[in-house]
Length: 214
Length: 214
DNA sequence: ACGGGTTTGTAACCTATGTTACCGAAAATG
DNA sequence: CATTTTCGGTAACATAGGTTACAAACCCGT
Image (cartoon, rainbow over all chains, first blue to last red; front, side, top):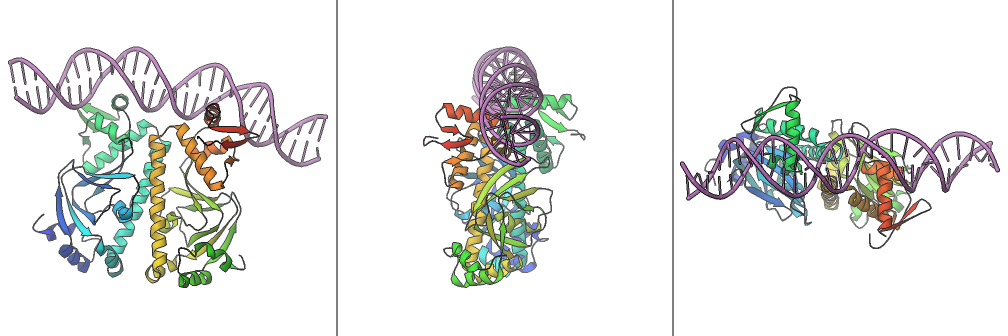
């Protein structure tokens, strides 16, 4: 638990009006998570809506065999639509949120959701926008796996990773890429080599550098 | 336009309380669509929320190359979450709703959405349930394409089709199956033969009959 | 019954991807 | 420094699924 939430909540000042910000400061609890930590497995009950104050959260689908598929990232100043939606979800289906790096969450008890939706237009707008964005990203995920080949998916993955890390150099093992794309490490290595030959990226020192014409 | 909406709206009486039903009868417009008709391409603006009064609607993703992927069906007494969500969606992404059979829609101008969400708890609950269901179905779609092989996807497709048509006999060309699964007709024919050899279904007279141990 | 369109069966082939195995390099650990 | 673990490169192979082509069966209108 952190001492001075107000400092963090400025990340949301462009979305939220001052009265909402004040209420948020009063009623939310800050939580720190370390990179790699599993924040929640959606599928069980959720008692708090998390706003991401700092860091990056990775949201993935985990199927019954434990295979992973990356769905999208949540960045600071955003939230996760799943938790808006799925508070009462009972199925076996699991969506897992993992801290991609050290992160700070502002947790809002779900009991405030209803009230705020009515009271704060900016909260309502935020929720709606978030829902819409996540929905769009779900469609994108479906597109990727349904219509695209692995090399293109890998390229998109790297671009996204680069965008999130805010760097053209990416530091991630082939194994991890394989996990997040739901494929095999060998396939990833093969395709990375191919892309290197096509001058779309450079591999050195176990890092991947994206080139401009990727 | 049909004469007696009240008769149709009984489909919703289990979800909606009487005052909502009355308002629905007053303010919605009934629309008939013929099987095969495209009802809407979500991606442009939507000015009305459709409730499905009679029939079955197929909802698919259509990618940039025009390839289709079946997402889910909407049955009578349900609605389509996409339209709740995506009223303002601007992207190129297209979700297409097609009448699977002759159907009747009750269209509610979107302007009533807000008001009803506040005024009618049963409307709010309906919208939330619908959102949740569709969301779950999106996850299922992702699972299918990300983790399952074509034979299993075909089986699930046939089961779903059978459930929707309420019959163990399915009447659909291999080409159409291929379209809806986003694959090739030859692949479908091949797999259907394989499943027939495994005694999971019968093919006769260009119809497909599912057997119990499918 | 004839002819043209549609649907299905099937073969032959190709490519993408999954799988296993093994080696060497690099990194971590003691 | 020595040992162990992790990671990446690569080969060899298996399989699913996409592609093309063509013929047979069927459907329908005249």
